[in-house]
Length: 324
Image 1 (cartoon, rainbow, N blue to C red):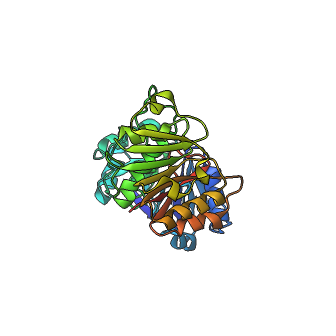
Image 2 (tube, one colour; image 1 turned 120 degrees about the vertical axis):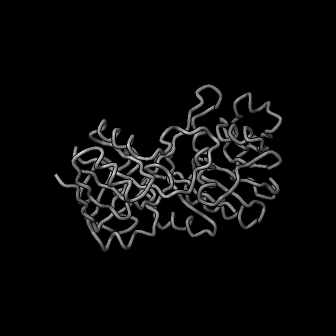
Image 3 (cartoon, rainbow, N blue to C red; image 1 turned 90 degrees about the horizontal axis):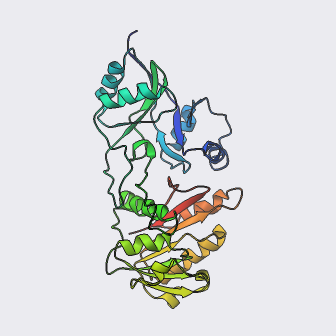
């Protein structure tokens, strides 16, 4: 069988694990595209529409961890042929596997090395183009050299600490800070910088911040874990954080919130902080309440110097990042 490439005119989105339905809902309700996907390759969803592909290429689809912007089908005979053809196109390729796992592993071993392992925080992600490929069967794969993520298959996982953090929420702030650095070049909080965290209990985010050497003004109705309450870098106040004005807190380098609240209230609170001029950097989780209000999400996105992402450690929520 001769090796051949068939260029496609559509676009393919790789959904976050077990979140394909949220991806399809976003395509329909955010973008108004009502056609059904042409193909499902596991959690990779392909739409065979040139017009839709052209209309959406410059837009971030939040529930897609990465997007195949110019997909093609590669027919090949051997593992070596598949790897050789991919290497002719570019150096960096990451796999998404839903079938033929061992064969996909052999192909990856013949490609130039990229780091597919869990990362140790803090980590700096190189801004190198990275393609994505997916085996369809033993002799066919779908791939795209051009994607919209610098992460391998849009995926970032950290080596987890199962002993010290007071909650697993610490992984969200680790990923958020990593993305702020990747997207905006923003340095991580450090010694000498002041952070304000709203709704800090039990302290997963505070734990990361003091681990970086930053001071944290933590506010919640309930206290943090005991080791954080006694940490000299932590100042705790028992209060409803959203009823405190920026003037009550004073100038800080960073403002953080992972509070469960209605997005409308979060947006109002964010605007108060930005209007006050008392911080340059904010990272907040937008918690969804039922059906997503996409016009409201757009208001977050429209704030200057803002980006919205869906983290690998998010569930039915988005993360708003505002850094300079």
